[in-house]
Image (tube, rainbow, N blue to C red; front, side, top):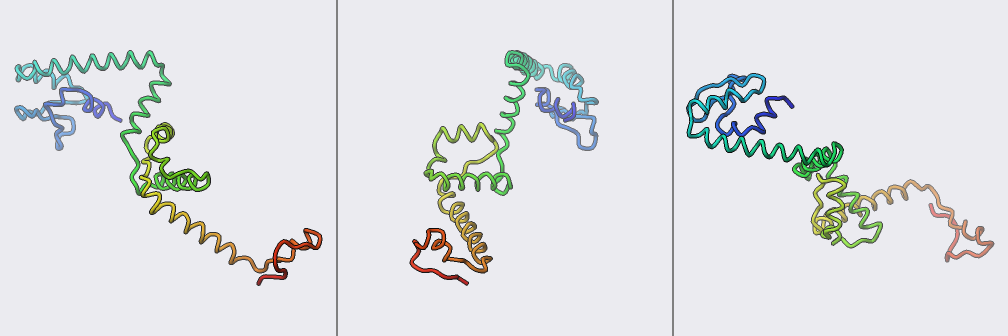
Length: 201
């Protein structure tokens, strides 16, 4: 991310300016329309313009700048107390929470399929997706994942999973050329627990 973009995102002075599409290194004052240089992402020129040309507005801007600096100092103190590793993880977690996967995202689909498999294999109730503890656990593992509603799992995901597994099993059975059903008779020393013997073709 460029220094200019970072400044645009954070400085309160941009409340009174907008980027000039034709002049990339200039910003247009929304109060008077004048173009002010913003080369190297510097907002000092913008602040000075408000101070000299719009004194009443500058009083409001000063309050915003003071509040912004206080917030930055508080954030820096918190980051220092937590340590670089914790601070980085917290910021990353906050960023991920703001960016949820779309339903069409392959990662979203893969996670939902694994969730359906877990419910079926472990005989879990579908309502587990509504349990707060489960939501917290999933949110900790992958904040970007959208847990599907249980109706979606019951009416769509699990039936589709069943059909997929059924087709896969049918394909495997179709690949079998012959089946020696008489094997259990030899295995059990003449006693066959099955009601018939022979070969299936």
